[in-house]
Image: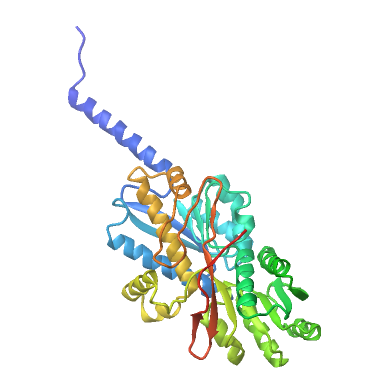
Length: 402
């Protein structure tokens, strides 16, 4: 006679087996549990560019607290882990490896400067990490399209070309003598692309293109060269402080010039460092000033910062806070559309299918596709009001062209 096994131990064993299977399945997807979603960011929060990374991380803190106050995403509370790359490419690569292999992040929000992003790209692609980059945009980041990487905003090339074109046409500057000062790396090459594009398209007289090494502090020789060349329009391809140094040297040499920068000069510390020379320069950017509360999305964002940040933290906000916040909203949208069964592959698929994602005026509507991993937005030209410690919009949105 065959003896049957007791039913209760069988059920218990089955339950244990199912439980183990569920844990294995959950563990297979990095950074995801039934109650938690871990995201990462590699940003510079030390060294000269730290005001970029700190502003970026504060915006992610605001979004993290806000989304969790709203119940999280499908019941999962968001937690953001960060690594400081110090604006050094090798440290950026080490940072993304640590976040992925030690912190076990699901996706990446924020990728530091152009060279830092370039250093991380092979690893991001190899590990298939969903990534949204809204800090520094170079054509090499999405040419060719990279499956898991999505870019917010125009390249420096597109940005500077649009800004130059607007100023030349709106201020009748066709007969001026144009010049460019730029950093000799991937970032600077993209800035140079925009300058040369505008010069060629508008038939401008370019009298000088001068490159400088990363970390340069003294621009006296460069400015003397521009003065000798008779430059009356200077396009600045600096990272942050370099803009101020160039403006101060131009003032020191009594050079009446129109000064146009890329978006990294859309910072009140740049105004302050330049002193009186920081009044009246122009910035090409794709997000409005923080002070423009007529923009519905800006008014909402500022209200959230007042709720979740201290007074001292609010003072550290800048335009990089806006791009970080927009990137977070985009990631939230993709994660929500995936539902409870969250995977990296699903988020990539949902980001790829994003069409006209609205940001209430913080940027132009965002769209991606299977062959388009950059959503270039449109460009605004701003003017520095150093006395008021702010920036004023002086153009309507300018469509970006290839």
